[in-house]
Image (cartoon, rainbow, N blue to C red; front, side):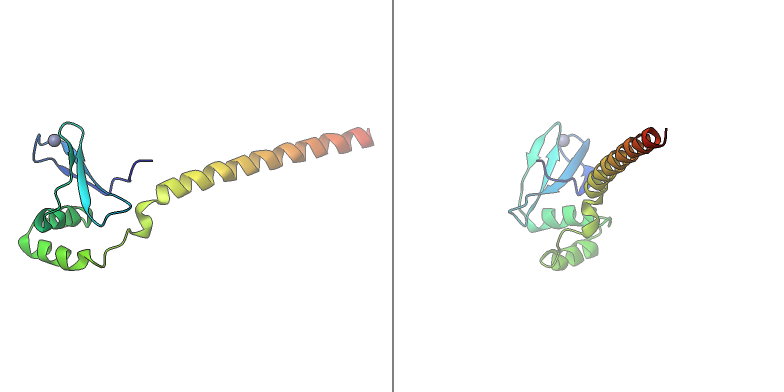
Length: 116
Ligand SMILES: [Zn+2]
């Protein structure tokens, strides 16, 4: 399974779109650009810049400082995978509904057959 994309920023290598992601077993963020590949630099300033992009903030130095101080407490937000959860529950819910309708229609036929 690939890691979820936390944010997308402009790649400083090719100016294309690069995805900010995070390894499950590491507190560090990394960048993945389809053109330039993986960028796993661990410098504080760069990590703070990526964190700021995730938080939807601009590149102002003051914001970077704030992002840095919050970095230790940061944990993945709950809304980071509602897409997957919704998708899964939607599929299973639909499957259950279809199954229930199937059972009901079989029962209906059964009772019709008895009455008839
Ligand atoms: Zn690039």
